[in-house]
Image 1 (spheres, one colour):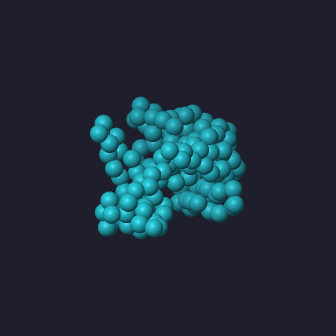
Image 2 (cartoon, helix red, strand yellow; image 1 turned 90 degrees about the vertical axis):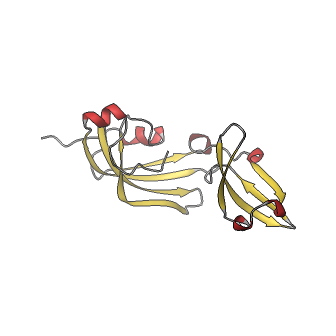
Image 3 (tube, rainbow, N blue to C red; image 1 turned 90 degrees about the horizontal axis):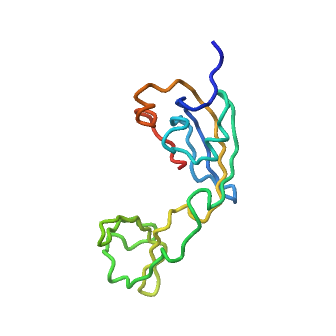
Length: 163
């Protein structure tokens, strides 16, 4: 039986390390996560393209600009308010919370600064504005089941966060 390669209709298990431009590790997955190659966009397209044709054990390196990943940092998504208007439980830098607007849309916020009686929160993705470098290793490849093909995702697998 010939060795399988990454292609559409295959469930691919990968490990990866994601670094920023300063070479700091932002995320590392040593336990394989699986996705359906050619499925519902579980990976950044550039990573999926780089993996095409790879075999188990092969590695790829992919660099994504902010525009190719989580977007540029948008200063209009950063807000400052009086600290008194913020619940006590989230009055610290790094606090995360969700809020809903009048249309029922939910946004995640992170407290980024507290000073002089004011609090600044940011609802940009935490990786917005960063160039990201991925080192991805193929850990396993198998044929997708008919159910996985119908659903467009790998069944019961941890999906990679790189999307």
